[in-house]
Structures are given as structure tokens and as C-alpha cells.
Length: 377
Image (cartoon, rainbow, N blue to C red; front, side, top):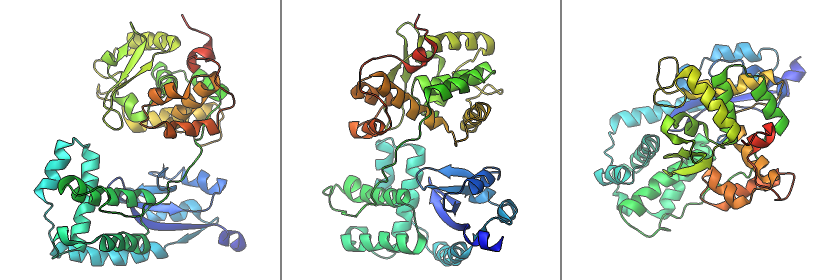
């Protein structure tokens, strides 16, 4: 058993994710470890950090020891070092109150950045100001900024995603607020990992829908797939966004503050009409028992429950339905340019990733949900 444990090590550390402090767990791919961590309350997978993580407030070390006792070694060395460094940084922060330039805050407001993005930018730019305490921001050189980012990578093991966010927060000041040339802050960014999206087969998705008895849950899964929606887009849909007369769905203020239209499946419309009669939502298309907007956690639970009932062994997420929508459209012959519009991608380069998983060339233009149920009227 000891020999086996040495082959399985879980490295625990601190990091920042979406502007919040989190505890990360990293280990080599192992089906047993994944199976166990899924059972730990609060554990979530991050696609951007490529690791499991917990919100710091909900992290309980004894739970980790209990979950992996006898199967893996828990390496806390990085976490202990991070705690020591954090105490030093915390003392420094307590002594130094940072004043964010008002022009920086005003520019964020004028550009209508989301609350989450504003919080991240302000937090990371405040760290930047603290690091160069006593210096005029206008006088800080490119070399010094590069050295600052490099120090964060080496000493704090910040993720590629966080590195990009910190660079953007700094560049925002020099380029947008001060109006300097775009290449003024010439920081080397990490290469984006080119990952092939995980997709489900048509048969797997049909099984997920068919084994889901709850009509609301059936509609959630069907709509995520048939419209290629992000989870946040699904949750923000209002009754008025279902344009049955034109057979369209209006997706408002999605990623990048853009509106777009996607096709409404005929089969989906029939399901939604049944759903409306049964649940009678007032404002949002999907509402909780309290009448308020349905939660992201509930959508995740709906998808995972359906996947489990369908006997799908992989870790299925709502976003996999969006990936599958694009891939199945491509396989059905839909032109890549249309798929780009459906998904709301700025660049065709983003959409082209689905060509790596699609099985056929372009030949047809059929909504995959209608194709699944052979129902177009």
C-alpha cells in the first residue's frame, strides 16, 4: 500500500480564480482519485486552471485526508509556503492602503465591463500598485512590469489564466486610461492550451433527455444542446426571448456584451409549450421554486443527474452540450460560418476547433435536436 501511495500524490496550494482566493488540488490523471474528489463537498473542476479547487472559505483539510486516506499522499509543502508568504504580504497590505486612480475606475464604468471583470481588474491593479509603492505609475518601465509578472509566476505559481488577467489589468491603465500605444506593455503571455473539446454522441444526448422525467429538467438539457447555449445564457433567458413566430431565440448581453439570435428547434418549441402550461414561469424562462432566476448549481446538477441515469461514465458538464451542438451541426453539414454565428464567436478560429472532432464534411443544414427526434413540424 505504501508503494502505491507514492505513485499518487495530490499537491495542495493556494491560488486566485475569478478574483477570489481558492485552494487548488493537482494530481496526475487517475480515475480513482477523480471518483473520490467528486464526492467531497465543494470540489469543482476548473477548465482554465486545469485542476480541482475549493473556495477558500469552504475548504476543509480533514475532508481531504478522509477522502484520500490509504490511496494518495497529500503534499502540503506549497500550501505551507504560500501561508508564510501570505502573512508577510498581509502585513504589508495592512500598512499600505492603495488608492486606485479615479480615471481607472471611471474608464471601467464607461466601457461597461461586467461587475466580475471590474472586481478582478481592480484587485489585480491594486496588487501592482502595492508592489511599486512610492513610484509614479507613469515611470514604471516595461522591463520592471515583466519582472513583476515573472515574480508572480515563480513565487506564487499563478495560473496562465490569472497571468493573462493581471496583464490585462495593467495594460488597461497604460493603454486605455493613459492612452499610450497598444504595444507599450509588451509582456510575454502564456501560450493558450489548444484542447480538443469534449463532446457527447447524438445517442448519449438523446438518452440523457429521454431518461429525464422532470419536464423542466428535460427542457434545460434540450435547450442547452439545441441552441448551443452557455449556462449563463440559459439562465438569463426571459419568456420574451422565445420568438416562436420567427422560430428564433434571442440571446441578450452574452459574453462580450453581444446579442445574437439562434434557431429554435420545432421539437424544442413543443417541449417549451408543455413546460409553460405546467410551470407558468413569470419572467425568466427557468425559475426556481421561490420564483427567482434558476441557479447555475441547479443546472449543473440537472445535467450530471441525467448523465448518470444515462450511464455515461465521463464527467459531463453543461458546456459539453454546447460543444456537442457545434460538433453535431458540423457533422450534419452546417457551414462553419453559421456555427460561428450560432455560438457567438468573434473569430472563426475559435469555431474551427470543432473540425478536429467532427466526423463528416458539410452536406446538410438541420437542427440536431430535430434530426434526433425526426420532428420538424
